[in-house]
Image: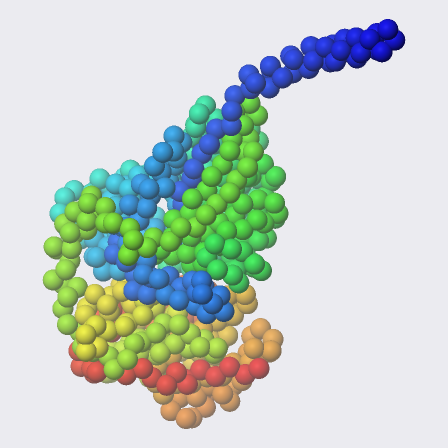
Length: 560
């Protein structure tokens, strides 16, 4: 009898507990499930409508200590991958982190990147931050990319009218100094399953030092993290808790394309300064691929030239409207397994019918590939060839009387590999020199020349070693103090030390002549004489000097 009463009491207690728990259980069952959102992201496409030579370098799966080259990229294959990654997903959005245009191959550049804007629009791109290369032709031309219309000088060259981007550019940190207003909207809010998500677009604050100064005249580029943090209260007032940053700035990882060991660079400091409300950061600019956690937040980048699409999967809480979880995967745009998208094929063919015959013009030949990759001193064989071509184009007295030519490494954009028998076309030459900068020959004293070369380390973390023409040589000391890295006796022309007092005729491109990349000394050059375009100088060099062999790359010497 005692046992029965005890058991009855236990059952009664259990019943009370179950009844008490039932409302909570039913409440949990009534809570709406998380909203799944897939964000697809690219960066630094640079008008590579066709697969770039070389594809992407990744760790060899059979031996991670080695690298292998994978054929990848191109708008036709990327469009197919984007469709595959969207398939079966109710909520998706396709975004980018800048430099979609600029420094583009001939097929896109001939039409001022209209084909690229059109291709990405057809692909379904929704939003993009503005990169530094979007300003290569200035603010007015960038606005034309957004809004459409014919080029003010070249008119309508394409196979059909240019309607502008179907996607929206965002530029929260790029401000017109006269009005204090942003050039493009600072952010865009999109709803997925009723949950608002904000996308903030940012251009790197160092943009004025990376593009031609006239192209960004009247604009200021504010601190990236401070800009984002100032927007948080405004977004929260609009009911936004889920925040994604699209930023054209990045980092330097040490691992493979889908990992993140030892990442360094500006993106680390920026992310660490961001308000905790920011959930995901999609980055670019450094042309590297990584899938990171920085300060507890997901940070991604998708290499360059359309070789990777990043798929970011978010779970959104429909009650709190915040991000529950975020994961990412960098997927290679493999040309051997992905079919070509018919719409992209048709678009590319329409432009190629106009550009193809011009790009196919023979330039000459090479005895071996000309690489733009620098050695430990910062010198590349292709950089040497470009500088030699610019010297050859301006050394006659009536063309400038140049003794030395210097070119910026950022202006040398693609290797010249050569085709069958080493044949080189105008299209390959253009890919190496796509900016169409005119050459400027100026007078500099030996002291000014040294001062200009010292500005190669204006940004110590990212030195810009100028490529130099034959006959000129300099050494630099990596351990020396800023402003004193070049020993005066190690700067020579045809074996003779540069005389600080003597005047020299020096050729640079118009970008450098205007103080681009922080080389402000060139702005003080005397008696400037404008010459041919850089790409035309290189084309002429091949026409008259082929076959072109890789130089020894011994003009620049690194000490320490």
